[in-house]
Length: 311
Image 1 (spheres, rainbow, N blue to C red):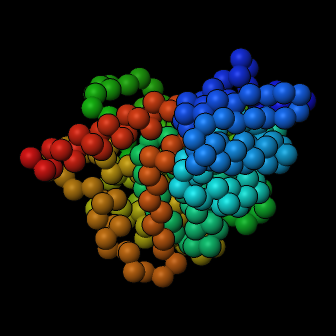
Image 2 (tube, one colour):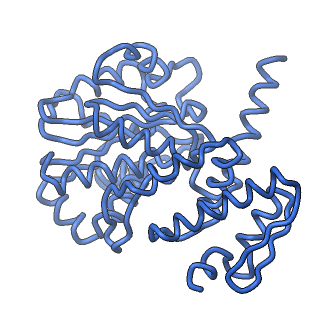
């Protein structure tokens, strides 16, 4: 009965979503579910329900995002790959929530980070590039595989000028680094974060702070890398020391550099594509784990850009 409540959702919203996607009607009698409609669609709806029950048995909670993702996998005939996603727990957040990859793209990203020294994650907003990289950093730090977590991003405004911000240098750059703080607070809790930061185990700094350093035994994340220049990107990657890992994340459709300046991220993907121990992971709109509208917005923009290119 507990599974039935979770499977159906409040006011049967999960079932209505499946009915709408496959043009079927789903009826329940006691512990039986009856699916009516076109044979192929009814079979797909049945497979979706089976996979959702599998997730519930694994202790997962159903949300609109993972229901839509299961529907996408069933439509592509890839639902068997679902078991490889749900079995992976990266780390436990400060609130005791297990952090796991939610899509095949995210699972691939996690595996590449585990098995390579440098990983470049490229894809649209909401695919979990930064969040999962921070989760992997926290996991490596807790397992004592690294001594430090270093998070950095270029201080480039997204279209608006922030002017003369008050405070010292750290306070001036903090607004740029806010998403990184948010992810760390989520994983470690505010108190632990503060403690590790004071000890120097965690450093959140703008990219300019990286020049001239060699970073040993560290997990280093460069976020918003599309806003680096080629020179900055080269400077950053050559900071790599022994026992360290680097994850570079960015979205090449959201470059905020002044006109005429090349993005270091676009260039580095081409330059390093055949270098051993360096992998590039490309996310698509299927890997978006935010609101469904984010997926739709990305698709609409891609379509618009495609039409513009053709013209």
